[in-house]
Length: 363
Ligand SMILES: *Cc1c(COP(=O)(O)O)cnc(C)c1O
Image (cartoon, rainbow, N blue to C red; front, side, top):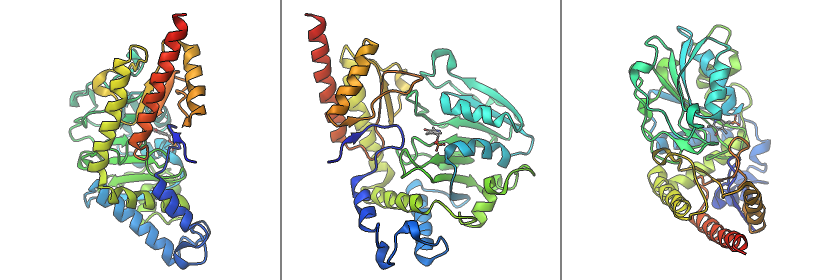
C-alpha cells in the first residue's frame, strides 16, 4: 500500500513513474540490464541523457541561449560552484530569506566580496523583502535568491528586477511547479529530490554569457563549462537518478506540462491554506502574499499537541509531517506528485484531530 508522504525531501514520486521504473528495473528496454548497470557512454544511456534534456527544455520553455546540465553534488554544491563560476569583480549580493539562502550566502563568502542585500530575518523569515535595483551594487557579478523557501514556506511571487546584474536562483523546491520566465535569470539550479526525481542529480541551467568567467582555481568538476561541453558526461553522471527524472518529465508532459500542474498546485495549496485559516485552531504564520505553493508549515495551539498530531497522522498513513527543527510544528510538503486526494485526507484528519483536542480541553 502507498501512503501519502508529505516529506520536504526526498519527496513523493508519481506512482506511474515508479511503475515504469519498476518495469524496466531488471531489463531496460530489452538491453538485458538495468540503467544502474549501464555504461554512461552506451547508446541507451545517451538517449536517456538527450531525452531528459530535451524534455526539460520543452517543459520549462528554455531559450536557446541557456545550457542545461545534470550533475552530482546536490544544490548545496552549487552554493560554492556559483561564486567560483561567476567571478569577474568577485562581488556578489545575496538576499537571505531562509536557511538555504543563508547557507548559500555563507559559502560564497569564502570566495569573494559577498554582501547581504536584503533579509527577512527580522520577522523570522515569514515574508519576502521588497527588492529594488538600487539595493544591489552596480558592479556585482550576480544577485542570488532562493525562489521558494522550503523550511519557512515562503516564495517570491514575481521575479525581482536586478537591472543588468545577472540573477541566480535556487529553485530546488519549486522547479516545474509553476511557470517561470527563464529569460529573467542568469542561472537556475535545483537538487532533484523535491520535485524532479531521486536525490543524486542536480539540474543547473546557465545562460551562455555566464560560462566564461570562472575563477582560475575553480575545480574542473565544479566548472559549469566542463559539464556543458561534455553534455553532462565529463565523468560518470548520476545515471539512474537522471533516468528517473526523465520519466518524471515524460509524466509531467503527458498530464499537460507546467501550466496544468500549476493549476493543480494552486488548488491544492488553496484547499489547505483555506482550511487552516478558517480552523480557529491551526495557524500558518507566513504573510499571505508570500505563502509557498509547495511547503505549508503550521502549528496547533500547543507543542505537545503538535507532537501528538505528527504521531497520529503517521498512524493513518499521512507521513513525514513533522516541521523542520528551525520552525517546529508541522510542515506539509505538497509537491507535484502529491495528489489532491492526499490534501483532502490530510484536511479530514486535521478536522478529526482538532475536534478531539477541543473536546478533551473542554472536559
Ligand atoms: C533541499 C534544498 C537544498 C539542499 O539541497 P541538496 O540537494 O540536499 O544539497 C537547497 N536549497 C533548497 C531551496 C532546498 O529546498
